[in-house]
Amino acid sequence: MLAGDADAVDAVRPLLAPVCQETFGCGAVPGALLMKFSVNLFLITLVTGLAEAFHFADRHGLDQRLLRDVLDAGPMASSVSRLKGPKLVTRDFTVQAAAADVLKNNRLIAEAAREAGLASPLLDICHALYGETVAQGHGGEDMVAVLHALEARTEDAVRGDARPHSMGSVDRPDDRAPRPGRRRRGGDVPSGRRPGSHGQPGADRPSDHRNSLR
Image (cartoon, rainbow, N blue to C red; front, side, top):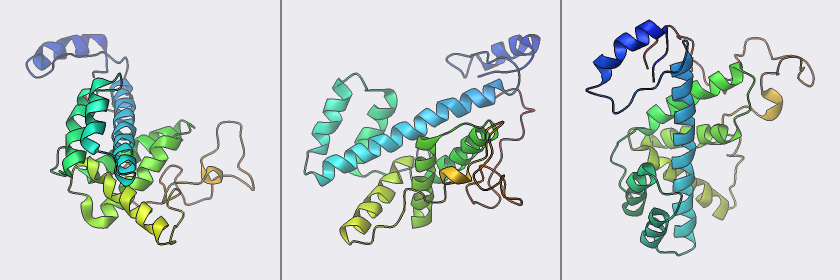
C-alpha cells in the first residue's frame, strides 16, 4: 500500500516488486496508513470472531475439527481462517502475530476512528478482549490467544462473577468524542482526556502521517 505523489509512487514500485506480490496506490498521504488500518480492522474482528466460534462449539460439545472442516469448505473460508483454525483446534498459541501487537494496532485504529468521529463497536469490543488477553499474561502469544479472554469471561459467568467485561477499558457511548455539530449529553469532551484513548495512558497515536510508504 503506497501513498504520496504519483512520481514518487512510480519510482518506488520497482524497488518493491521483489518483496511484494502486488502494490496498490492509495492516493495522497496518509492514504496508505488508513488503508492498512482498514485492512487490520477486518483482520482483528475476523480472528476474534473465529476464536469465539470455536469457543462456542467447544462449550456445546461439538467436534472442533469438524467445525474447521465445515468452515474450510464454506464460502467464508480464507487464508486467515485456514491458518488460524488449526491453531484453535490444537490450542497452538505459537506466535505469528502477537496479541500485544494486535492490541497496539487496535488502539491506533480506534484513535483514528475517534478522530474522524466514527463509531467502531466491533473494534471496541476487540480492544477490550485483547486488553484482557494481555493482562492475563498472553501478550507474547499468537492473536488467537484471545480465546483465553473469552474462556475467562465464560468462567466468570459460570461462577456468577460476571463483570461488565463488554465495556472493558473502551469508552461507553456517552464518552465518545462528539461528532461535528453534536454536543455530548452534559457537556463537551472532558478536559485532560484525549478522545479515543480508551483510558489507556500513553496509547500510541496514529499522528505520524509523514511516511508515504506503509
